[in-house]
Amino acid sequence: MAKIKVTEEKRLNAASGMVMLFVSLVVMLIGILAYVLGGIYMSIDGPAAGAVLAVSIIIGVFLNCAGIIMLCGLKILQPNEALVLTLFGNYYGTLYDAGFYWVNPFCTAVNPTARNQEPAEKSSAAKGSSININMNMGQGGGSKKVSLKTMTLDNKRQKVNDAQGNPVEIGIIVIWCVKNATQAVLNVENYMEYLSIQCDAVTRNAARNYPYDTNDESDEKTLRGSSQEIASIMQKELQEKVKDAGIEIMDVRITHLAYAPEIASAMLQRQQASAVVDARKMIVDGAVGMVEMALDRLSQNGVVELDEERKAAMVSNLLVVLCGNRDAQPVVNSGSLY
Image (cartoon, rainbow, N blue to C red; front, top):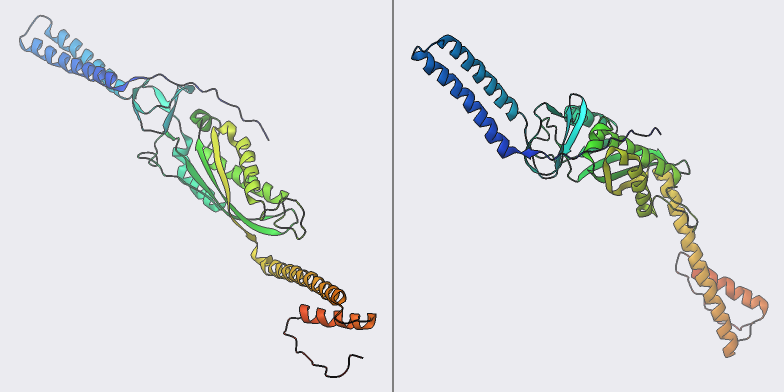
């Protein structure tokens, strides 16, 4: 896997937005005042009135344009939002704290997901994955702000083969958030789609490394019996893959796990057969213990003396009664013992 080039983050200490808003309005008012003074001077027919009017118009236009450009540098950040800025193609800095700020008006906010959000969602839906995000005001309407809120990626059911080659359906959810907005925006094209693709890869890799279930009592991890441990392994692996994209994986949970429909009935029969065998084994073990106990009690108490042939017949009859599926029908022998 190619190493992602990590961008060094720089936090901006932006100027106060209220102060710069006041300065911008003052500059625009001075420009308007220049128009008014030029008109008054021309109305009184002073010397070089035309030249003074021309100069006042030039100054007024310049100050008004400067005020409008300064207003373009005003930025508002809501809680849990970040703004990554570039200046003429170079990384300029990142704003994190909520508030009203003023930055260089020639800076451009960067967030590829705002431009490609709709195509990315369609692509994720086609792959069986979807990202459920509660966007704040303006975030879903093409805003360049990066949301730092906790988000959920719902990786829909996908069919994979387990370690034994059996097709299984598995689905997971990932709780994640953007930890480093600069890396999320500048290191990858679309961090949401990038996370979805890496999640698919980690899910398939985990399914290939573990069997769905085992018939023996070994300590081998299985998808069904060790789902929490495997989910923790998936979380660590996914975190390692997306850490250079500025994403933090908070939790991974397996939400769906089942055999694929084409083998589900056969696997159900196998499970039923295994359950029947285990039940029969328990019944036989219990019946043998009861027979041994009966023979020992008869011998210790001297109730009756049985030769080997009679003991064998008694053991056979008791095992049939204890291991049978139906209630035994007793037969009373009214004759002698021998």
